[in-house]
Length: 336
Image (cartoon, rainbow, N blue to C red; front, side):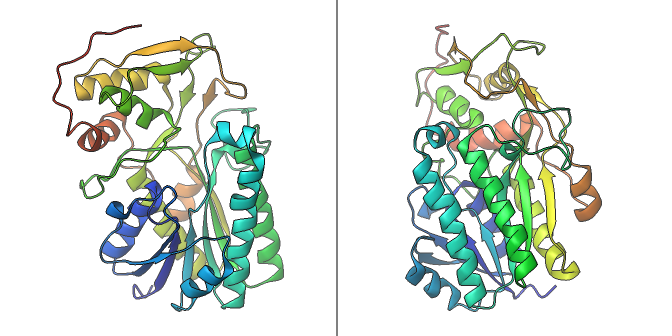
């Protein structure tokens, strides 16, 4: 594939987007970062890329972006806090669903046909069996997951009715930081476990909450499948090559097939950082299944991809480089 292709990355200053931008630049692509900086960080943008400040809800901003003769679009510009989506569904409907439709319409208007979409394992809801493969029924239990499923359904129709080809990549739990240490800006307002664990280790939070310890798991806490952000980035590039070369759509899970409990994650973070991580056990959150683990056989088969950096040791070593650099205080006493 011609690596001079011109790539638009919406949300390219965000957590996953910035890691993808770096990889694309490393591979010689011309990359345009499109971000409104509500969550994205300028410090995480690869200087080899070009920044277009804009919003997917603004058609004028999108026209500016597509004036760059774009060949493919990676779409990360979405709200992603599950709890917030249940309190303020309108915010998620407008940005995630309507914003994506805006983006697809701008692609069609400008003759751009290749779309790689950041979907989520949240489309599945509570598992009927494990590990979860792509044939598992979809039944999201939160509005965030519903927005991802609604976009996938729209992509099917757009692809039937137009020339658009798409990849929908259903992530499990994205985590970690750049293995080469080039991306150092901490995620804004994190809602996921591992950054909250690291904020607690670094003293940004006094303590954290563990939602329930009475699940039917080995230690009573929820089990999840954690995937390193560098592994996610490599899968995205392979997905783009797949849909362009094969002219076929793609829908795959991205995970490891290995589950870790909340307490296991906290324990590994303590081991890597040398800090005691204080936490309170609180009530379960509604809609939290005991265990979510991916089957990634299809990604391996179609993309020849599997995770390389997603063991907990690597995850927390890369996160420690970002979160712990300014922390030189002695370990805190636990207050459980």
